[in-house]
Image (spheres, helix red, strand yellow):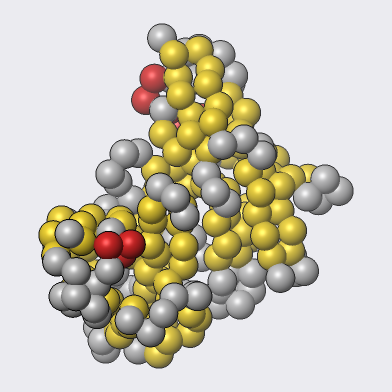
Amino acid sequence: AQSVTQLDSHVSVSEGTPVLLRCNYSSSYSPSLFWYVQHPNKGLQLLLKYTSAATLVKGINGFEAEFKKSETSFHLTKPSAHMSDAAEYFCVVSTNAGKSTFGDGTTLTVKP
Amino acid sequence: KAGVTQTPRYLIKTRGQQVTLSCSPISGHRSVSWYQQTPGQGLQFLFEYFSETQRNKGNFPGRFSGRQFSNSRSEMNVSTLELGDSALYLCASSLGTGTGNSPLHFGNGTRLTVT
């Protein structure tokens, strides 16, 4: 069985300050982990993925995430928030059976 | 490369009716998954098709069904619509290698409103 917990349902930051969106996972197998972003009335867009190569993964738009097996975490970070980063973010774990489990999402608000 | 295309973009239906939603995956992608997204329940997995066969299924009633054609295009059907079926329905395609490391590529969804 696998599960994903996004520890914050809402995160609010000021423009230009760092972003941290937290994700813990549980999986019986070596998982693949993903972060997706969803802007209002749009589909989800892949930000980055971890598939057992480097533990620090760089994605699009300046985002990166670090896989920490000992902490079963895959937190998403960005050094400096931009207004356009305001959206909902989903952490996803996927097994080798091809089944994806989504977290409940974190809404990021960026204040000017 | 064209992205995932979902049609129609918006739908308004009446309780008791049925509806068919369509999804065209990215060229070369053989897996198509469907998700229901609502404010209360979040993103919920409906089913996944690979090479015209349902490979995975979520926990939805039999009123929700789907199929995949030989060109990988997929349709989902909801019969006897209920008010609670109002949602954004998202389709995602992937290479579907079964290894779990193929990312999902999402369409912009179909917004279904049941009145």
